[in-house]
Length: 117
Image (cartoon, rainbow, N blue to C red; front, side):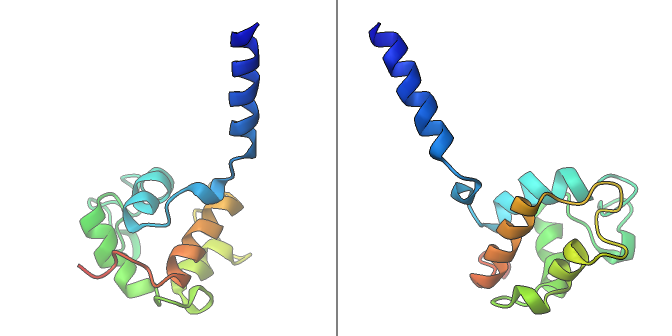
């Protein structure tokens, strides 16, 4: 019986966690969002560098994001624009989930920590 109660408590605690608990850091956003969604070898990889941007490593992501992010202002950042616009929204084949866009916006609005080396 004790185990059943413990499992129920843990399950309820997990249900109350939100995606906002994810870290708004360059490292996390690159590894969890940009690499799997944007850096396929035919798009924004170090191999292809579509539109001169690459997001497959922290180093090249930092370089690329430095040109398309205005720290402290997500609304004026080109990155935010291409993720949210209705025409030619990125990524083309599968736009990011709103929770990922919100995390990127929070990172930018917080000053884009980690962007400067």
